[in-house]
Image 1 (spheres, helix red, strand yellow):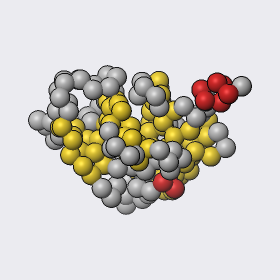
Image 2 (spheres, one colour):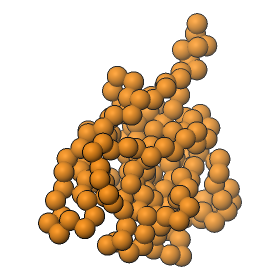
Image 3 (cartoon, helix red, strand yellow):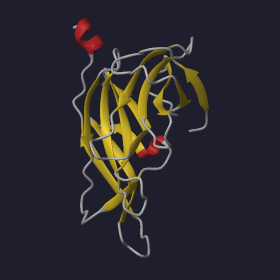
Image 4 (tube, helix red, strand yellow):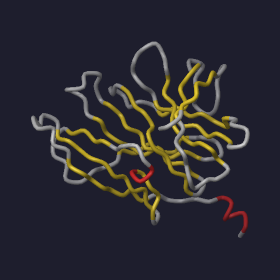
Length: 193
């Protein structure tokens, strides 16, 4: 995330936004498959507490106008989340959400999910946990910056990162790569038929 802009929002904006959202950071996450869109990415709520909240937004490249903002809810009982990567395919935007389960780092796991949003409206359709194979016990998953770690390839989202088993005194990190099949819809293609 090389750039960030502070934005003020009055009232409700987009689907699911609340009036509590008045100011947030807008890290720029390029979504290379959509040249008309300068940024599709995540914003972190700078509220009264130190915990983070994920937002995904769509910004028009020419005007920098935000078309919609959608919050990605924290799962019940979990502490915080952040959207760190995105990719656009068909009519959807896929955002990688990294969530921490506890405010105390030694007790917390970082788990990942993929939020699927409608590109036209910002409506969140799913937010499914990504299963990383060969995991045993409590673990933390790390997906580092860079488009190469979250790709759309052959009808799948490919996620690359590292994982660590909680309680491992050596804090050994093991590389992982997993793919998640996604159903691509494209209304433009259907209209042309």
